[in-house]
Length: 421
Ligand code: AMP
Ligand code: GLY
Image (cartoon, rainbow, N blue to C red; front, top):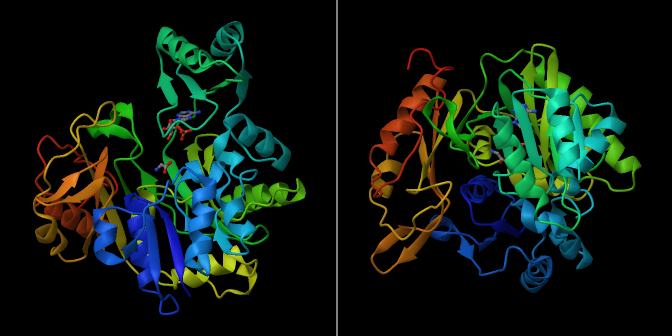
């Protein structure tokens, strides 16, 4: 089987790394990829925001399966463009990707499916915003309705700041909408389900660290680190969320005439009143995927192909490696606001030599002088170990071997969950 992977982050590097381990997978091409992916597989240029460019590339390469990593091409209809060429695609149609593309749409479907989530008001004008902020009280949660690369959500106890964010979102004009919702307390869990539109198979849960700095300080980012498994999570969490969240969502999407094929990402809060959905994404999460796929023992290519061709129900149960995985993200100076790029990255091979460690690339670019930074999140250091503590120790040992001028990372990834670290 030949596979085209679309995207350029550490998530796509993790996908490529896992696909290479599947004996049924032959050629892998990644477009556009990054400097690290290009060391492992063939890469091609593509405008990864253009559905048509992605469909055309798939047709030119005559691959058997296309795996689309990021949300932007999915929302733009890249999966539809690939399928129009008669090629199997792992990723939802534009209509189904609206579960991520519009928070208001996701709320509507959750309501139809009977899925528990934060109470919310969809607002088109500032007087509605003011009323909703007062209705729910502090802490305030204000979300841009559309895609915002992880930066559309503000959680604050400062009503003026909440109101100001809503104003920025609505000032975009057109049919701009903002979602104001009740604050959910409790730890967050990311649970991914792989689905062919009818059957949904959960992966192992992970926890993501969204804020930029230690102790959950600073602005929201795309994600600064993650770990899996979650020793503190209830034993029936995955079964419970599959039954009460993932399966009803998939059934409802199918009944609406927009079946969801690909990866449904449930961002959950385990609140004192029960598990609630914070958000859905229509793709693998980054950085959670890096560790979750490192732990997967089943052949990934066969699983993704089965999802893309409607045969997941015939697949044997997934198998997992024992132990744990921890991912620490190294981000450029100034990330997330104004990342500085073009700095030389030292120590890549030395970091990769630490036992159990894979250095996955995100914003990197090859130059005549060596590999340099080319984006906000630069590397995902992913370590496996027999325990979270061991994986964590290995990840930070590898990280210490990397040198990038002004770069930053969190030093508390998985610390609370790995007590003997
Ligand atoms: P989202 O993009 O919807 O995942 O939101 C980004 C982050 O904002 C989440 O991971 C949470 O940490 C936080 N957040 C979003 N919605 C809520 C909520 N209703 N209550 C508390 N925190 C939230
Ligand atoms: N890790 C958060 C996300 O992928 O959206």
